[in-house]
Structures are given as structure tokens and as C-alpha cells.
Amino acid sequence: IQLTQSPSFLSASVGDRVTITCRASQGISSYLAWYQQRPGKAPKLLIYAASTLQSGVPSRFSGSGSGTEFTLTISSLQPEDFATYYCQQLNSHPLTFGGGTKVEIK
Amino acid sequence: QITLKESGPTLVKPTQTLTLTCTFSGFSFSSTGVGVGWIRQPPGKALEWLAVIYWDNDKRYSPSLKNRLTITKDTSKNQVVLTITNMDPVDTATYYCAHTYKSGWYGVDSWGPGTLVTVSS
Image (tube, rainbow over all chains, first blue to last red; front, side, top):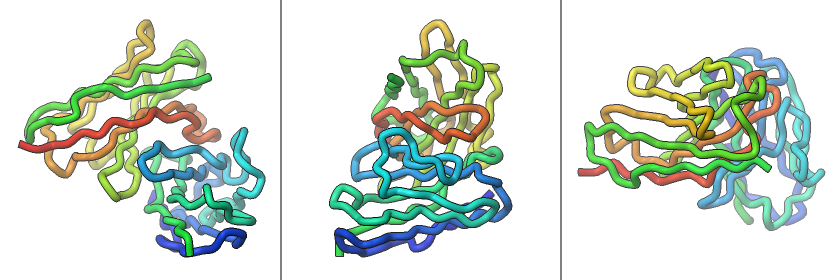
């Protein structure tokens, strides 16, 4: 299953609302996770089951979708949110990742 | 609290076999559904899923690398070992091990810090 993220690069300002899309090449129900990766660090799980916030993750992050189209939304971008975001499908093996979306400061 | 840490060589020569060890704490393969996976990331590139082993010894591999990968677990030592044969410079990457569940519902919820492996003669 291929995952296509868009955009691959995003320039935004603190306080902006940001939306990242992940499209699956076939239906994956809600078996989708979102990760944040800061430079030089391991990825961090933000959302699982498409819309469930991982414990400890700020509520400005939210996820939605099912089937083949999913979105990650950051309601008000904070300085620490500038990072690269990845989606991953866990519906079937191999557990593929999207190509990533880099969020940079405008 | 779940923690994982990768260990192994930082430099390998082309054609050599890479052996990476993931040592973890905070969970056990005695728990139903538990899995440990390996993911890699070439410098400046995206994440790539390599392999996973579950509590019941079910093993799954990336089709693109399947012939070169072997994943095993040592339940008594809380370790998972990944071997990659016939290493090539394109295999230069940071290698992560991570905790997950067989159901897939809960994502990959804990990651090791990663270890950078360079393939060069």
C-alpha cells in the first residue's frame, strides 16, 4: 500500500492553521498513524487509529479520515511544531510510511 | 515506561553483514500482541519500514529487502536482533527499533534514539 502525503513542504507562521493530507493507494480503514520528527530525533507518535490523540500530545493536533484519505491538522502552529510529519498505514504488511511533510517557519 | 536502544557497528564495508541489536525495557514478549520493528532513514530522506517480530514469533519483512533481512528475538534478554546481508552504500541510514502491537491499531508508540550506520570501504 502506497501513501502519498501532500504537500511535501509547507511554509507557515506561528498561529497558523495547518493541514496535511495522506492518501492511501487502497482502503486501510482507520489503520493510520501520524508522527512528528524533529531534526536529529526519533519520530514521535502523535495520532493513531486515524483520529486518536496519543497520550501527552497537545490538543491542537487532530486527525481525521478513513478509507483512503486522511488529514492531520494543527489548529494553531507553535514554534516547537516546526518539524517533519509522516503518516503510516498499519492495515497490512509491509507497514509503509508516507514521504513526509516538512513544516518550516515563514 | 517503555525504552528501546539500538546498538551495533557505526561503519561497515560493502558486501559485509550488518547485525543490529535492540535492547528494550518496560514491556515483554510474554505479553500478547507485542511487537518490535525496525525502521531506517537514509540521511535527508523518508522513513522506511524494514521488519517486525511479534510475541508469537510471527515475522514480517519489507518485500524490497526480504532476501537480505533476518529478525530474531531473545525473550530472556529482552532483545531483538536484525541482520542485513550484503550491505551497500545505499544502506547508509539511521536505524531505529520501535515498539508496536500486532493489531496495528495503536501505531508505533515508542522508538529508540536510532543508530547511524555508514556503509563505506
